[in-house]
Image 1 (tube, rainbow, N blue to C red):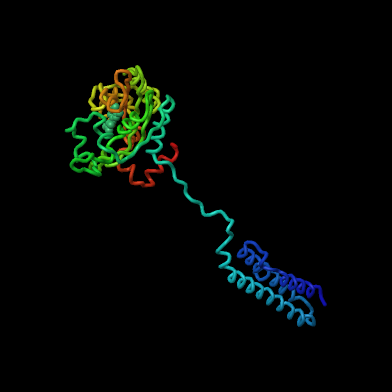
Image 2: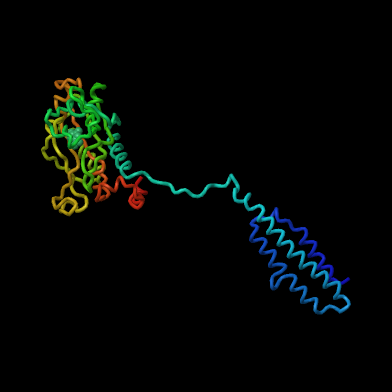
Length: 349
Ligand code: DAH
């Protein structure tokens, strides 16, 4: 028999020995197999080409062998395809040790970031975090804080009451974190140096500038000889840490029932550098927080002797801090969880 015959036979043996089970990346490998044998420039066409020039007496056997080769290749491909189909289901359940699909990782909410930053700044000068309840009674919310009985903050307009029954102590969602001051002073002896971050609630219509839920951070320092100068220095330190070294502060006289004297603090507008722009409404200053010396009546109500101790307190809105720091124009954005908004703060951590 001719060399060509042996060659054909060797190919047939080769085809028959090929196993699909062991083949990785099956679809591509099957296609390679098809191209190798049945492709235009494949083995079989090549052999048919050579077949043309063999002596006539050999043609019969060689032709037979060639057809056998062609059938072997075609059958093998059919066999591969059937095998793949049969094992498709198994393949889809897949390898249980494979990593899952990539999950997009979220980021911290800008309010959490700002709140943590405020906590961090105060903790560097010895303040520790105090937390308390969000549903609070009248004593801790108003009475102990020296609110007169007819103060508008006690009004239905401002406060979400949970219980408001004749003869019973009123219970409400806290309207400010100043209530934490009372709880801390009732339960601790001075020196007290706390910072109270938390959620507060007010009965307000939701708009770009107001929301019924927002966040505050309260700070309280009570000890012997705490003075207004300590408050001022603490405020200046905070403003520079929070808004940058170039930041200036100014205090304007104000009124809060629980502090005497009371003040509101402004910082120089970081956007226009104090020249006046639409953020600071042309004034060069931005209102930031309320503060003052703890009213002696408040100390007394909490069991601390105002003849021995003095203290300062301050309270700020977290949403407002974030608004000024990151130029957020609409309060509602904080609560809508629109990814386009949240993603802008991915890198601030
Ligand atoms: N509780 C006040 C508010 O909700 C903020 C505040 C002002 C807190 C002055 C203070 C303070 O501790 O001294 O508007």
